[in-house]
Image (cartoon, rainbow, N blue to C red):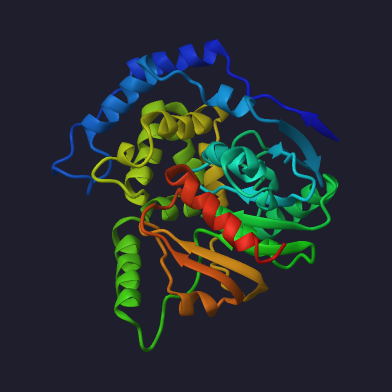
Length: 366
């Protein structure tokens, strides 16, 4: 059964957040003048001040402006946006977010994707968009599931909505789910803005050497969060679920590390949108349950993808394959582009480019 859903926001919960922020016990400042030890104290204090004093908590209203639902699919309760296009020939498309993302990162692309005619585009590019919250994230249930199981739920959800043929798109964990959906015969094609592929080559180009070096540096200095979430998600959850300052710092640091900015995350994503993302995790108390995605999925799946595929590479992405590296996994790679700007949160950072990339690939498989 599919039931309409609206994101709740209780004033008592907002008041509790503000009180917790006022009572934060801060650590001493970092001993460096950059972000190399993590999010700087001055930055986090100002972000939390803004969260408690100036932020409008509008994430709920922005989500509630779109049709949302809850459905129990094969025993798992799923929250999802379902925005149908006015165009009768629209292609169904399931969009999947990752960590530390949520369905809020798609809000600026839903209109252009579902109603291109109203946004200066070609109506032939229209999609019926379904954007679920991953299990353990947002307003979905909190079971610990492996990626293939999530893909099964997505396929069951799409068919329950009456979609017998659909496309899939995702980044981060959403890319893993999208790749796992490739085994279902109903999937017309998959597009990812994060392509988990092997970067190893015997004869690397300069670009491939640089991408491999950047990935090695990320693993050396920037991957501790994944080790913690993949080994001790419950222990981490106590601090992040109890301390809004801790939750804010944990997520904001990733927006600094993974966005295409000039020094601060807000160069790439507005402070309001950053706090939208953080607020979803805080108000749903999903720090531990979202971290369990890492616990359940420690093995890297690089199995071949045989359905039509598209890969869009943004310059501040963690993994930046060349076309020939992507072709090692995506056997029917019909779309490959390297973009000039943007990072890990492509739909949020560069909504116009994101829409162009999604439209461009799926024109090839409609």
